[in-house]
Image 1: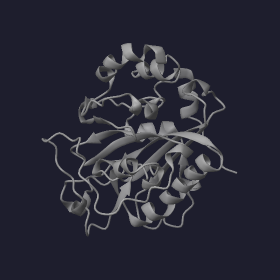
Image 2: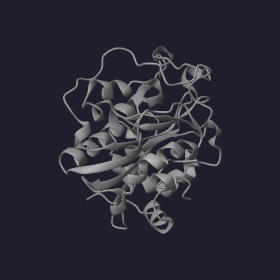
Image 3: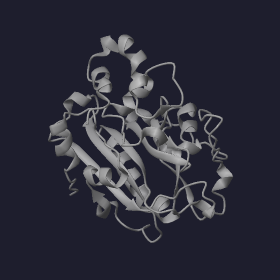
Image 4: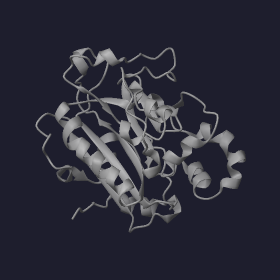
Length: 282
C-alpha cells in the first residue's frame, strides 16, 4: 500500500536527503512521466501520496508547480488531480480570459483535446483545480486553463453543488487558516462521451477528497483525529440547488469506485482508519 514511500521520506522532514533522492523520485512514480520538471516544487501537492491503481499504463503523470495530475489519453481527461490549497494560493490575479488551452506538456502522439471539442455539447468545461484557487500569479491561473485540468460536468453540477463545495473549501483556507491536500477526478462506469464522438469520456460522478491540516502543519501531524472530507456527486442535471453535504462519503468508497489508492504515504493502519472515517458537518 506504500508504493510512494519516497515522498514520505522527502516531505516528512528529510529535506537534507532531497538532492540524493530527487533523481530517483521519477522512476518511482506510478505510470508514465510525461515531463521532468526542473525543480521539486510539485512535491508539495502529493505529500499524502501519489494515487495509483492496478493498471498504470493509462496514468500519464504531469508535474507542475501548481498541481500534479494523471492524464488518461483514451478518456481525454484526467484520472485524478492532486494539489495543496491554503490562503497563499489565493491572490488578486484576475481570471484568465479567452479559450481553454491545449496542454503543452502532452506528448505529440497524444490526442489534442481543444476548447471547441466541448462547444454545443451541453457540458461545462469543469475546472478540476478551480481557477480562483490559483490566483497568486498569472502563471498559476493560466495553468488551470489547460484542457488536462478539465472534465465534462453538467451545468447544474459545475455551477451549483460542486461550486458550493469549492466555496466551503475556500472558506476553510481563508477564514479558518487551514491547509488542504486535495484529490479530485471523475468516476467512469458508463460509455458516455462528449457529443457522442468518443473523444472525451463523461464521468458518471465526480469526487473530491480533502485532508485538512492547520496551516504550517506537515504530513507528520496527521493522526486519527485529523479531518478528512470526501464527496462523490452525480454528474447529472437537477443537483444545482442540492447541498454538498448530502454527497458526503468515505475515501474507501471512492477508492472502490475508481480503483485508485489514496493516502499511500500514511502508515497503513492510519490510512485504513482515515479512509473509512465519515465527515460530519454541524
